[in-house]
Image (cartoon, rainbow, N blue to C red):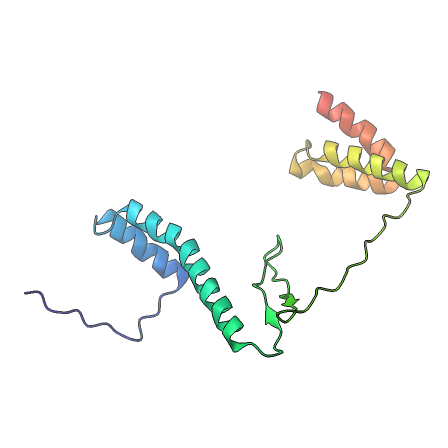
Length: 154
């Protein structure tokens, strides 16, 4: 009969250490890659289960306490503040639709020019982009676009 393993309470792993341990376990064939993938796939289901349980607890709590929704991250990793939901039975406030501002002909032309500049600068190697940026600031985007078109055509 195998002895039960003693778990140490102070063994906290950093993310790097955890990745190393997983790599070693897979290499030593103590755990398979498919098991790791299965655990990762189950995280989403477990999160949904926890959110559903929290929602049930919030509904049981009742009262006039504002309920919060989960936080979402922006593309850069920054967390947006959670929105608060209205109490149960309350109507959501109507939102005003924001009307798009009319653009002048100059603004439209400037945006089109900027689009051409950006589409060309992406094709230029990173180590040469600074010279075109400098040219655009000194002589204008039109001159930079002409130079970049010539460079891309080569």
